Amino acid sequence: MIKQRLTKIFGEWVLDVNARSLRVDMTAGLLGAVLVLPQAIAFAMLAGLPAEYGLYTAIIPCIIAALFGSSRHVMSGPTNANSLALFAMLTPLAVAGSSQYIQLALIVTVLVGLIQAAIGLLKLGSLANFISPAVLGGFTSGAAMLIAVHAIGSGLGISDASVHGTWPTLQHYVRHIDQVHWGTLIVALLTGIGALLVKRFLGMRWPFMLVGLIAGAVAGVLLNLTSAELGLTGVEQVGDIPSPWPAFHIPAISWQQLPDLVGIAFALSIVALGQTISIAKALATRSGQVIDPNREFTGQGLSNMVGGFFSSYVSCGSLNRSLPNLEAGAKTPLSSVASALLLMVLIALFHNLLAYIPVPGISALLILVAWSLFDIRRWKSLWQLERVEFLIAASTAIATVAIRMEVAILLGTLLSLLLYLNRTSKPAVRPLGFTDRSRNRQLEEIGQMTSPSEALQCPQLAMIRMEGDIYFGATAHVSAKLNDLRNRPDAPKHLLIMSRSMNFIDLAGAELWEQERQSRKKMGGDLYFHRPRNDVIKMWRKTGFVERMGSNHIFLTKEQAIATIFSSLDHDICRGCNVRAFRECAQIPFEPSQKS
Image (cartoon, rainbow, N blue to C red; front, side, top):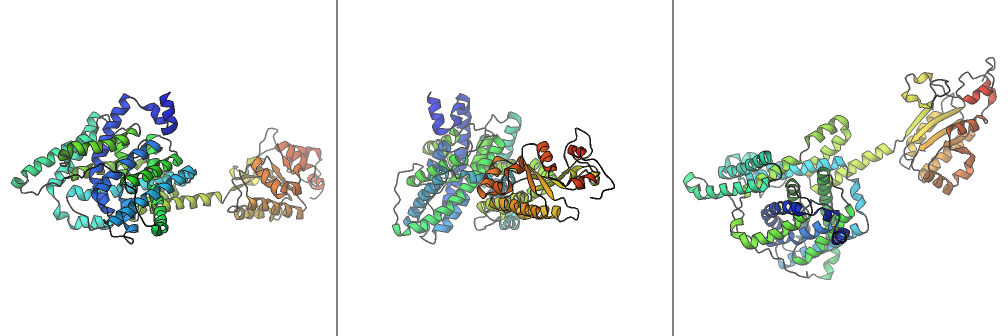
């Protein structure tokens, strides 16, 4: 009974909580807590905030987003994209790191939460469905490259603090390759190799990343103890960690600044939501989970809304922690809760030991994460089966690396929508005919026949199958196809449309069929429909089209349609016609001497 009540509040994952899942989630949470330590400190400094604000952002928002969101594996917290965006947008208003700057960052975070929660509560999360699988694949691969590129520097011991952009960063590494710190590289290699060996021989049930990090930490301590004898400088470690206890605080700002801050908050909301939903859907593709965008947006909104009052700045799903969380075997969002709680416990109890965590060891784990993000099979499949989708995925990946993640997601989504619109703007108009005069013959698409020129087509009645939506963007294409049918020298005057697959029409579509009806009338013929959908008929009734055309021009069966239309044909032409396309033609004797 208790689980059922909790399920209504938090989701179906509550039913999967058991002793084994708690053990696995605790292990994954420990890895997440260790991974976020150096990241949170670095990202806070990137945002122009004191280091402890990064840790606060990895605690309260992480718990709330996990419990009230949709994804089982997304870990929320500080990210480089949010940090950079916040810094760029707030520095014109206040000096980075100042008391005023901190207050602005906190109130913006609360506003971001309100906007995100509103999007979720208003059920606008369906907009996330326009992020196609190709965009997600490209975003994931691009993000993997970003993670790897920036992790390589720490793994080699080459600082890239003064360099921005992926390509300049790679050039920086090449130019300073002679500055590689061999102790740092050894620790990174031991960490990565140790993690891979545990994963290879002991399986996913073991916390292979954590074991690898412990191996790297031991190696780092030994190298630092013997660095003087070996002639090496020490390996960089996380070092002293500030107190992680977030205190409740109401941000104080001037009301005159609120309009400017709302605009900033709206931009940051889109940036954060774009990253979170893309990460959530990418992980869901790997885990088989179904994501509810509205719930995800609401959870993110609540996390930022509450986080802003507990010294947290803008948070969202973190790819650097979410993927390791999945790889570590996390079963429920309790892994994120465990990560936040363990982060506080670890720092409170073991801050002296945690100070020895090697930065190159964390870099090695991030490189392993980046490698696991590449789906080579999917890239090959896209290339072989759908080149356009491949180009969309590649464009998104390049934009992710070269521009910014949120811009890349927007670019990829726009390309997908343009491709979709291009496809739907050309609904199929398929001429139909018979291949023989047998009793059980069926109407077939002429274009699919072995010998289209031998198709049996009535010279007075053309038949076509319409497939797709007839909306404003498609009317030009359909109109051109109908004009081609009408403007042939031997064009039939009557037209029967098999409209079962015509799913939707708008006002422009209704006007198109009215124009076609009038054109057929001028030719001395008429327009008929077989089995149009109810939604199509409703639109026709609203516009008066059914009344003008006549409801007796709409038929439920092909047999009924042909029998009724046949009575309206010119039977003098039928007498001289040797096509004999319909069974009803047998009613009219064939007189070859009479000209049609």
